[in-house]
Length: 636
Image (cartoon, rainbow, N blue to C red):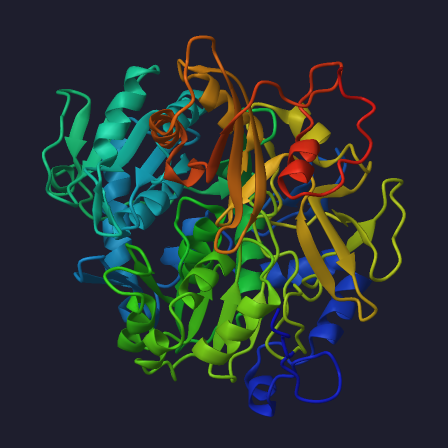
């Protein structure tokens, strides 16, 4: 194996930022900021909350009277739209670009803060005309287009709660989320473009609604211009609704004043029990957390052009495509399609075209683009970039160095962030003025107290692997699991009572830098997306030929992890390539293309305990030619 040479600027293990980076940083001494916050965490977060507008200031910064159901800024009155739009349109920023959107086919649309606010107000009035009121659930199932952002903001503006479902999820996943949330309205599009293909989203919505108690209304954006079925009385075209005299106020709509702890959105994340968890976030603390982290970690300036390549359907899109950048008054770039369409330089051409200064993407995408070498990137002028970022999973040092050298031209620090859907905001991340180590998420953000512990909850020695925990609450934290508070307590707060259990293994080195290793539960992270093993296995068993199923995640050069499935067929079914292909199509249909297995193996038995639990660690060991360890609990 080729030896990797670390990027260093002296004899230490660190990459040190240039004097210019330090001089312009919003936080010039990250260590001092962490120490200051640790002295009085509540005072620190109160100070950060003061950076935002409030209808009424809070009475209490942190209410911990009912742990672990913490509450932040209680008594405060706000709405995330107050800070994302309302405060900007009253200043010179009303004419600043809020969003630059490019479609996969090359079409371009731009929105100033004034224009974005106008569209949000119009659609908020549309939702109100449909009977949507404060507290109602609205499902958004969309491609990566501006109307996704508009729909999220309009829902929040009137006090309703949005549930965004990733547009890559298919029928069963969408059906389950609509059914569980009890959504009043579904917002979708006729379809979207991805990698040169048309994804027919409205058709998926129609099939999903046949399986569930249908919502009252479906709003459809005409994006592709393809023919779709429109059910009379239920389905309405977005462009027609937006031109109707919905409200006597026209394009005006008052933002609904919300309590800081009122729900803002739910977002489903896969769990190990087969039923996805609906993570609930609120207006007040979430606004404070995403704004503080984006401002400090990515050193956001007025002149920056920010591009986060995630999808709004994931938490990264919620926090750092939609809400964080808008609260900061930034200009964001959004691209609809695939990074390699029509050629592997699409992302680099967008950076050059729009003068992107901060670029935030995933290790999976970076590894995928590495395959094409340096020449595609070198065709473009990437000199506008000053910072790079990584999210979704730990970035391997080789990919870190390629990203730094080829894209950042050895001048852009890489902000490697660790956080979760549940945390809402960055938990661990460097800041530009801080020395970096390739592959490390560096240290906790100010106000966050993290540790690596053993099974007994005691801190492990430097360099030893253990379990990652968070020892204190933070403003953007999830408040509960929607409709299932007991599961919230059991999943996150019972393993180490009083501490948040992240579900990741990690180690901390002698310099106090954290290295996140991966999941310790039965969740497979494919291309940064979490998929529950039970959810995938359940989908396999719905196929007519499958009796039992077990799936595991194995390392993959591009995806990070890939799904490997072990299936027992029902009697009378023959294992062949045609069946393999049919099963892969079935999983894609039930859960979406992201869940397609890399490999399907037909077996006559599965390793189980005497109580019937599948021992996936044994399957992993066998697949990788490793020791199976203690198998004394296996059934004969």
